[in-house]
Amino acid sequence: MSAHVLIPTTSNLPAPRPAPDRSGTPTPGRPNRERGSSPHEGERLRPLSRGQVEDRRQELGDLYAEVSGGGPWAWNEARADFLRHLASDARRPGFSLLIAETTVLTGCAYGFPLIGAGPWRADFGGHVREGLLRRVAPGRLFVVSAIVVPPRVRRENQDRAWNLARRLQRRLLADDGAALGVTLVEARNDGIAETLRSWGWRSAGDGTLTAVPPGSCRVLVLTAGT
Image (cartoon, rainbow, N blue to C red):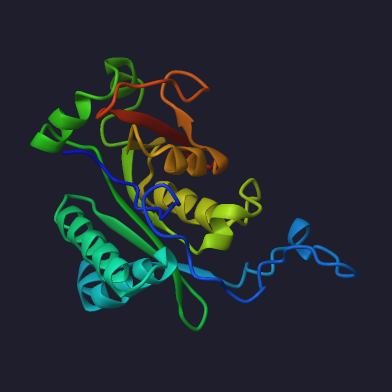
């Protein structure tokens, strides 16, 4: 078992459906406002309780499927996969889920602290160097399982503090009081690894994406406040 960052990419899901040009991409005669104040900063972030997560489970699944794109079969498969992971992680101690919304749901992210000595920690420890587990205080290592955001957030202004993915991941760690975020990415998912790096994630132990054997996982970490 491993953690999964559920970010739709061209490497594992169909390309997103075309959307109206609301992303701030420059066009002739139109300044690029994205490099100044964010036109998307009106998106509010707030946590959901476990009961609220259950109440909005179907809506969260719809969000993931919608940003994934593709036809009906791919839509249903993506939605079912997301909901399976969500149901599993929601049972973990300290589970936390944030949503982003305007008048509609626009994104979400969730995870849980790595605490205790349960089976998940034992599995996780098989991928992570002991030095990483020792360098943070118990309970201050937070596993980020999912970041679900629209395609524009993955493609544009990834280095800006107001990028929605950065806001979500930063708030998750802050709310938990975590010192370090961590996730496992399957070795074949280069697109997911590169997307995470654009949001400030780094390979554990160094600043590069090192080669890993097929079937194994990359370990990526995120410093709180990034």
